[in-house]
Length: 235
Image (cartoon, rainbow, N blue to C red):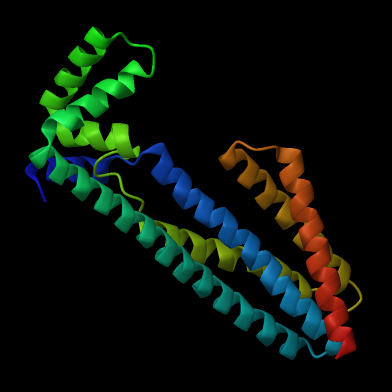
């Protein structure tokens, strides 16, 4: 690794970018949503087929653990692939700087020209930036990567793991601790409140439409409960 990149990586460890923080939060929101829906799906299927509370609890707990670790491993694999792709792009640009510096300088100049800067000014900006940090400038302009700020697969994995476990806990607790007469409505309310929250958070993090995200999540939650309940009834 070049000395310049080592310095950038050291700085990155001390300060996360907004994209890095949002990636961790995104993994948590998705994990929570999956934890809620997969656990309630199993709970409804099993509870529709048997009234044995211990059986219902063990089935829900087993699914909660499986879902949490599955989401974590999926996030780890996905973000690791993204990180490897980013590192490969940086290595490619570093090699091009050594073999074809002029084209790299021209790419930076062209980047600013496309944004309305005059050719003379773009040339001056490009030369100044390249003299200060050639690799960091090139990967930011050409690849939209901040040198050293790679997505962290471990952060995404642990965020998804804990969020999925927490999300699945709400329907599991509602179904197993409430009396038989109220366990169904209590679980439905717990699920609807949980998916409403995850819908709200996902919209806020993604700068999307809050109302649309909440309605979508609630509909998916209702359909999930409906399907699994009747699967349990059928068998």
